[in-house]
Amino acid sequence: MKRFTTGPIEMEKEILEIRGMQLPYHKDEEFSHIMLETDVLLKKFVKAPVGAKTVYLTATGTAALEATVINVFTPADKVLIIDGGTFEHRFIEICRVHDIPHVILKLKPGEALTAEHLEAFEGEALTGFLVNLNETSTEQLYDIKLISAFCKRKNCYLIVDAISTFLCNPYDMEGFGADATIISSQKGLGISPGLSIVVLNERIIKDRIMTNPTKSFYFNFKYYIRGWEKGKLPFTPCVGICMQLNKALKLIEAKGLALHLAGIRVVAEDFRHRLAQLPLKLPDYPLSNGVTPVIFPDDNAMEMFYLLKENYDIVVTQAQGDWKNKVLMIAHIGNVSVDDNEVLIKAMKEILHIG
Ligand SMILES: *Cc1c(COP(=O)(O)O)cnc(C)c1O
Image (tube, rainbow, N blue to C red):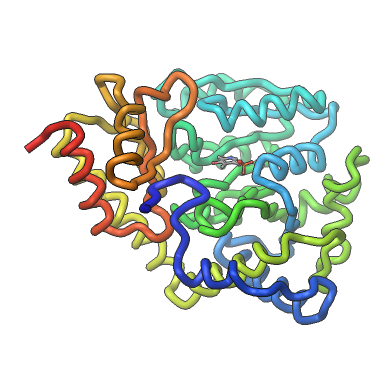
């Protein structure tokens, strides 16, 4: 079977080997050492500013979104949320549940984010901006320069859900002025789901995390930050996934981050180029290199999904909600190559009865 899925993804052989091994005991020095070594690489790839600290949560990405919101904001805040898809609805729901005042920048289906959209919010007294930098349900990669300049003007905290852009597209936490960067294990990192990571800069730790009266025990970042200098986590972490994380980051370090990212771009561009042979379309907004959303003008995306699975042993990703029959998502991360693209396009052509 070949997976072109957005996460969990088609994992590399080296990661699969680590998954099959016995686990170290998490209270041993050796494990703390591995975590600290992992953390150095992670912060390097995120381009975290000096003084940044990391929270490692045994939970999926959504938990990290919620945990970040409740550790950083209180009902005295007011945050802006871009609403362009299903993952952004999660930020809105989280703010609703926790009574965090919020305003919503609504994008129409298929609409790209522009400076004009943000202009409408210049007058709001905002203390935070929440963005899913790559909204995975549409695969729009927002223009971070616009967002980052807006947050600097407004002097508000910038919280970036980088879950599906980190290690798929270039990312620069310090350069973007992101105060928090949220990551989850099953996307660009290419390892099992269950670990999520929040990288925080010095100002947000000092002015918010350590001083806010966060009403949560397990998700209170204070406990995670306090023991971290020694590589200790407050609760038993998903040790096996932490071991995969260490391996995944070392593999990228050995290859070089630039080369890793270029490799994904090549596979994405190759796929988009080959797609021109088919009567299918791409969206007009800016796309991530990690995934290509393929538009089916005849609303037969689901049929394609099932035929690929049943007749070719190929698994692609279904779109959600209204897009279910309109769009399929083809991932370019993990163990997928230009050769795999060729096989996929050939199968799609046969299904569509094209030469
Ligand atoms: C995958 C993803 C998440 C996290 O989803 P979980 O299922 O909770 O891991 C959050 N935001 C974005 C943009 C994602 O792509």
